[in-house]
Image (cartoon, rainbow, N blue to C red; front, side, top):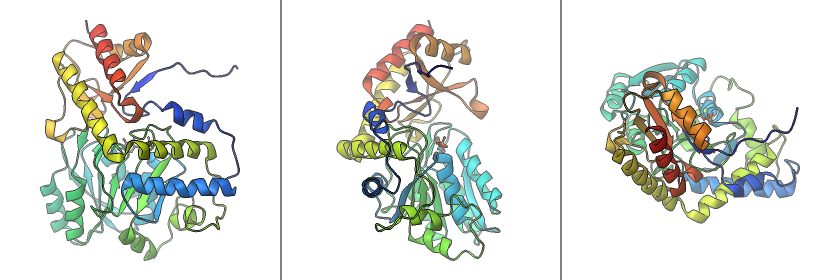
Length: 370
Ligand SMILES: *Cc1c(COP(=O)(O)O)cnc(C)c1O
């Protein structure tokens, strides 16, 4: 065996996206103990930066030491009790995974289906809430990475609250790329990821849990079925004050990287980050459309950070993506489910959302689609 030196790629798929060099160098700094006072003060800053990213004052805002899927599982493991009715909106892959979490933790999933590539229908959510007055939770994905469709987290949350439900929101792809106001919209429980619009490495899942959700956790009559993800225990390490107790060994260097990503987000400003994602989407869109490539999702429902486009007639999906990788070191994403072989997913997330990447992507596509 020899040392592994990865090829230098440009990552324009559904994640991971390009990691900013500042974040890579932050991760190479010396490892210290996860209970070292210097590390603990970095943890406090990380929580503050994360509160800024989520636009919340929630005390229970912290990074779970595992990828976005673990943030998802943390929310469902803590909030769903056996027998709970949970309304879950499915308009792509990740809504389907939410449903899987609900049933595995003993909940009863009430599914609201929408076509893949479309936004979640508020009318259908309202109908499900009316038909199920005993429902406790509404779960949905704000930014469906599998299709590139956006959903209205503010209004879905309002509907859920009008019917005495709390919400669990997947913001893995939306955080720092789409408008997201946890406190203003009164979102109860939310999870995200680091490798999409935050320009950071994969492997960390930021979460934020509000008062209503905490009450639901505290009023559980059954124990939380996961030891590692039990928020009561995790908070002994990530909670308030200087007295931290060992729960698990935090991924110290990965958290240096995450801290740097938050520093960079604060330098740029969250509004500017969203603006950059949107403006770069328009440039990519115009370039693709001038080549005759069309979008899957209606203009109003599109995510700027994840562009699903129809593969032009007569081209083979895998062959083109392989050429892009081999000839241009460029990664774009394949379609999933019913869109496999029909759609490409071009990510403009985090550090990948920049003009030089767009130029590369357009000229590489022009070259391989000759
Ligand atoms: C990427 C993604 C996840 C999963 O995150 P991992 O870090 O891959 O575990 C969950 N939900 C959505 C919407 C995603 O895009």
